[in-house]
Image (cartoon, rainbow, N blue to C red):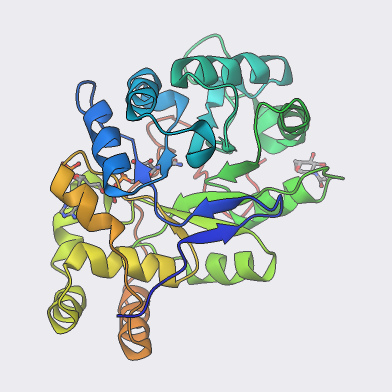
Length: 305
Ligand SMILES: NC(=O)c1ccc[n+]([C@@H]2O[C@H](COP(=O)([O-])OP(=O)(O)OC[C@H]3O[C@@H](n4cnc5c(N)ncnc54)[C@H](OP(=O)(O)O)[C@@H]3O)[C@@H](O)[C@H]2O)c1
Ligand SMILES: *[C@@H]1O[C@H](CO)[C@@H](O)[C@H](O)[C@H]1NC(C)=O
C-alpha cells in the first residue's frame, strides 16, 4: 500500500512527525511504559501537557530510552491558570523540569480559556477574550530558546482570527483540536489549509468513552476488511491523509505498534469515509464548558463577551 507523509514542515522549518503518542488519561505506572513501548515501536513524537500530571514519568522514560534530545519531538501545553504573562515562563520551566529537557519542540495554549490562579475556575475574562498578552510571552520563550514552535489548542476560527489580527512575531504553528469520525470539522480543516495552519487531531479514536463505537462504524469495518488493516489503522490513516497530525493514545504495547502503521487509503475509500463522517450531526467527546461552569460554550463561534 502507498505511504502517507511521515512529517509536516512548520513555518519555522521544523519537521513534525505526523503520528504522535497521546498521553492524556495514561495513568501513573502506565505512561512511562507506554512511552518506552512507543519509542521502541518507532514513534518520535510525544503529545503531553502540564495538566495530564504525568510529565515526570514521561521524562524518565524518554531519558531511559537513550535517544538524543534532537531525535524526539516533545509537545506540552500551558494550562488555564497560567495565562497571565508573568506566569507563563514559570509554567513552561515546570514542564521542562518534569520532562528533564531544556526546550520543547512545541508549546500550546491548551484552551482559549484563562482562569485566575486563585479560586477554582474563576474566569479571567480579559485574557480569555484577548489571548495576545499570553501569546507575546510565548513568543519571548521562542526567542529565549526554551520552545522551538508555539501554537494553540481548542481555538475556533473566530478566536484564531482574533489572535492573528495582532502584529504577531510568530504565527501559531498548529491548532490542536478534536477531529474524529464523530467530529470531523471539514470547515475548520479547509480554513486551516487555506491559512497554512496545521491541525492536530486529538481523540482520533473517539477517546476512551467512544472508541468501541468508532471501531465498529460499518464503513470503517468494511474498509478495514477490504484493505487488510485494522479499524484503528483506518481512522488514524484517514486523519493523516486529511493532512493533519494525529495523536492516538494507548497504554497497550500492541495497540501502540498498531496505531503507528498508517497507509494511504485509495481515493474512493478516503472519500467514502469523509462522506460517512460528515453524514451525521457532529458530536464532540471533549467539551469542558459545563464542567468549568463557564456559562457559555467555549466552541461557540459567536464571541461570548
Ligand atoms: N488539546 C486537548 O485539549 C486534548 C484533548 C483530548 C486529547 N488530547 C490529546 O490527544 C490524545 C488522544 O486523545 P484521547 O486520549 O482522548 O483518545 P483516543 O486516542 O481517541 O482514544 C484513546 C482510547 O482508545 C483506546 N485505543 C487506542 N488504540 C486502540 C486500538 N488500536 N484499538 C482499540 N482501542 C484502542 C485506548 O485504550 P488503551 O490506552 O487502554 O490501549 C483508549 O481507551 C490525548 O492522549 C492527548 O494527548 C488533547
Ligand atoms: C479580540 O477580541 C477582544 C474581545 O472582543 C477585543 O478586545 C480585542 O481587541 C480583539 N483583538 C483584535 C486584535 O481584534
